[in-house]
Length: 114
Image (cartoon, rainbow, N blue to C red; front, side, top):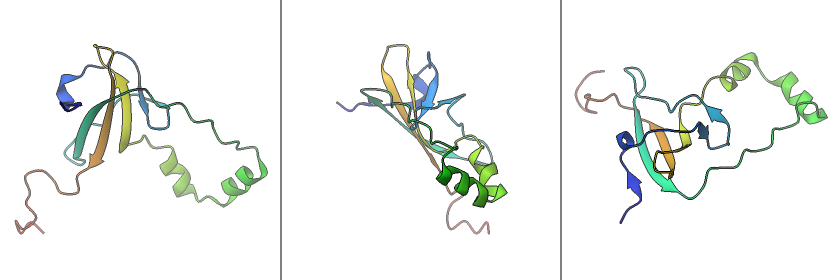
């Protein structure tokens, strides 16, 4: 018996957390511009929240000085790919792995749509 379940059969009761243990508002959904593949499995436990890095340390200050503004902007964007965890109505911990599809749905690799 496999512990994989279909993406549509789960309902989230608690908050959703990412693989670092940080809460996120929702699991990313596929759109016209971004198409994702989903794989859900039942796991034993939620990930523990990682301790934050100390931005006031000398190394943290030095890194912040040399970090370009574009990198700082990207770091503040919501996470789109990776592993997300939530608890369903049956009390199971569900791990959802989200991967980006690099080909749009309905378009074949050799369809000539270049």
